[in-house]
Image (cartoon, rainbow, N blue to C red):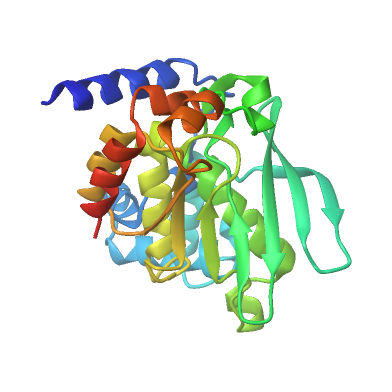
Length: 274
């Protein structure tokens, strides 16, 4: 393992230490990718295809009540109610603009995160948060002013997409995709929460969930180079770089991360990206 990769792993571990959220004895199925859900069903002595059915109910139809899942037998529904739940962040504040943009403050435990829906003629984009707060301290960013609190879980990330889709109108109900693009561009630095961001993006890409094209899921980063190198080997999605300056002198001033990973280092990593 390279020194940079070790440094990145330490940074990610440091942010993970701060994770605190309400405990539940039940498994939140939104924390599981389809493969993980298949493994859960196998452990229950059920056929893996049940996971595919459940994924469709959750993400195509926006269903969080096992009793409404008509193609899953009653015995299995009762078993699921005993051990599992389907729980996404709740909307605490909603603001709607005349152009159709919707901004939500969503509740995650006793804290709030921001999610924004931006409709256009040819697309509907959802801007999703990955952390409560942010540790990078970029001078132009309002999130940086509150500092870093904790990473969001998989369910708190994909749950933003689920909640927005349910409000706008799920594909399984309307026949129209409520969201065509997702950008990991809300609160937080997504590359410092890879353990949860990558599985959440896998669910976005999964045909049994949202079935988005890999070019319609975009991760935006300030430039945590070792984590970018790690992500390149894990998942193929679009990439956006928050550069904000034409040279290191200015970028050092407004984005402290540049003092560790300067523009050349960042661009060298970006050029290796698929």
